[in-house]
Length: 447
Image (cartoon, rainbow, N blue to C red):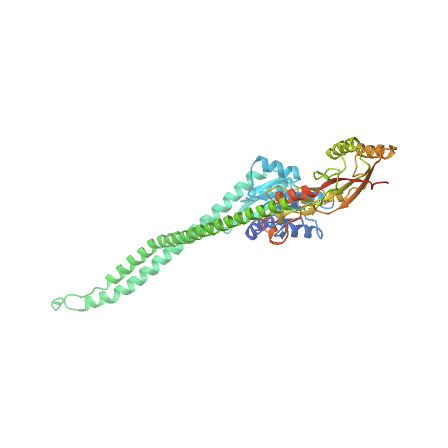
């Protein structure tokens, strides 16, 4: 049996799509999150995956990337099943490896078309459904005459629904007639005693009028019943309207509370930004040597530390030291910053968007720098410059290179400061800590 996996955090959406797939004879498995679906794929391999886009935690696009990035699951067709629409979204989904996009309000014909395209159902021309009526009941029979199935399917559906509507109408008519006959019998039984009493009295001895004729209550009860039936839709609509008003009031109250929470969070974020900026501006820096100060050059994420602008800074500093007849050691130290990153170990990591909350980072660290060997930390031009300075005799200037690791110049926020921190604010601090320091140290006098 072919099997399908539905990944959606909405239980009702999973049930509706699952029933459609089961009507085609497919076995259905369901997962309420992308993480649960990836765990299920380690145990079994479905023939098709229907993936929702907006879900808590990992969204649909990230799940498709993980599925296509795994050689064991890359060949499983994935159909996006979401309320998102538009040519741009479809192009993004196909670029990630999805075979198509279905709307969240999916129809039976959309599901059947996808299943036929994925060859999870037999060809349409191989089977045709013919509707026959046996004993007033509609029955379906499958033939293999190679004819056009789409027209027969439409005719079969029309005939089936027409038969069902006809039978339903007949049942309703019989119910209404039976109700009226019962009401008429009851009305007749109530009128008979009054008619018999009226005929039993002699005509000349009837001076007193009848105080309350019997048919009146029956007519009033009939009118009351009709009025009640007429008022029933009005009462139902009134109840629905009152419920709609209650829901609207609750929604407005929720919006008011949400606006207050957002305003409070924005105030806390502004306070945190001021605190971070103040701490960054007032952070003490290690005092420079007596005669020469330490020069710092930041390293953008993803670049080798000893290359690019750091090479130019080294050349300028060496020229200045030579011009001042400097004698001693120029220490070049590399430091690693901890960045807020998104991605995975298969496709790599990149800097997170500035507005992303800090808690949504996939990783905090510097995997690019961690994967560099000592030789890879230097560009060829940088290594050649250092080698030429070391070979120069009598210059009195030596170069010493070290990797100092994770020693932040500016401390990272901790504790409650992380609650409302964004990735952009964190990465500004990480960029200052991802640096190269040039520290000239003069030789002792007389050496």
